[in-house]
Length: 373
Length: 238
Image 1 (tube, each protein chain N blue to C red):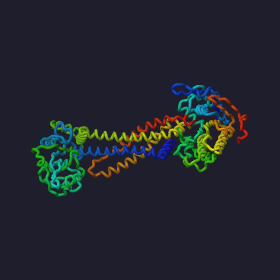
Image 2 (image 1 turned 90 degrees about the vertical axis):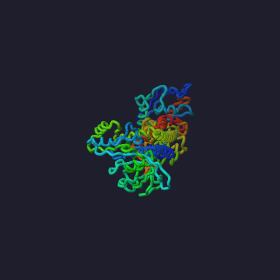
Image 3 (image 1 turned 120 degrees about the horizontal axis):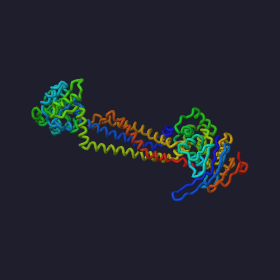
Image 4 (image 1 turned 60 degrees about the vertical axis):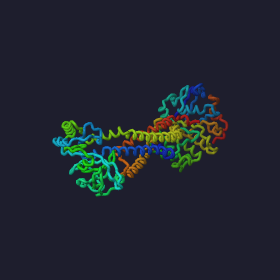
């Protein structure tokens, strides 16, 4: 009956309910879209590592993120391959150059060189064409999201990167880096473009044999490659994300805007619930007079908050899903990991309950004696 | 049935600077089967006395007994439990909860502490509504009812649990003469026919003919205690 009373109050006090709902929706939607952009950017940060199909990355010593390593020697490939735990080891070379667009202007791109025929560290998804394109030494891939920026190049279009002739052999899907446009090319082409010394690479990707203990293999690799950093892909991904998150101000910026969104929601919820409860103070006094305890009043108020929060969560997530659906496949970074919605929902419930504490305090102060005049 | 006994009950109020006594030591007892009216001018202490009797206000002095159990200084929870079990309240304004239907307002008295409704609660509500002339209003919102209907709904809410004690604060003041008489007839019936303690606070002289006992308070003191046979206008009572 107490929750029914709460439900009836929620339905009856439409303006207060709408206000509190707005607060909950604001929290879910604003925080949700901030998080989706943040996770989208986090994905960009470690996109090369996450989609490399490698178990281990070998880079120059003391690397703090995948984009900031020095070149390492090709001989480390042989050292790695010397371990029976290693199935394959492939070099990757990351350089940069200027991409000549259709109208003759230039766009700065990061060129990722991958060795044929395995093409480890290459594109993982294609919008047009396929990985066969990179078997041709002249071919490069551009990403669908960068087509407009690069002047809408079409398949087989010939252009230049760093004054070197290239042909657009395929269009990748979802290969966008945090530091800019990613273009994949055969290793030798990237050597030409970035004028890298012979026998030097940005990283070596390693795939371990199946059923090998990863930690043991990592220890062995670290032992035979003391001059290098040896990370599992997950470690390097985490390290890279952490680096950008803390060193670029992204973390602070998103944290701040998330806090603002939460505060806006809390203020809206607090004010509307406070007003609603204030208007209901005589009802609460009646409930107390006819035998209700303070705890019963608390149950009614908290039930009201939970009902409003439940509806707000539904509306908020609906709006968020619509937004994510609309921006999916666009150049706006957005990604919502599956474990985030329950956490966001739980956080919103906690925030809503906190926001209603003032209202609860007012409700609990309702004196049964006040019903007598 | 229960008996309510007050022994040397007094109440002070303080505004922070000085303490003012609004109810001087008072001895009273209320027996089942009687409709008692507490009368007196505004500020005489009627409502304070009613609030103390209803366990919503603690006395500054004195002791109060429900049957042989002392109920003077109960905790909030204990007082709530006793109010729920033994008391029914009818307020000056009906104070129905907007948003709840008429029936839900009545049923709230049963389940205000979150208990399950007794199996016969809805049937009992329907019977009360019929008895009080509120047939067909069960699912209506209180705002759609007239003042008299609302007050009768609040009486139904007060009676649905069969309380031993019914306390009414100016139950007719917001009603027209006809509705007021109807409400008083109901209250009288509850006291006499059902053997309950019914206490009505009122300064409306039209209520007096229904009283079995009439107390008059002035400046926090009972100045008269008149039994049924001596109440003037008694001949006008139904």
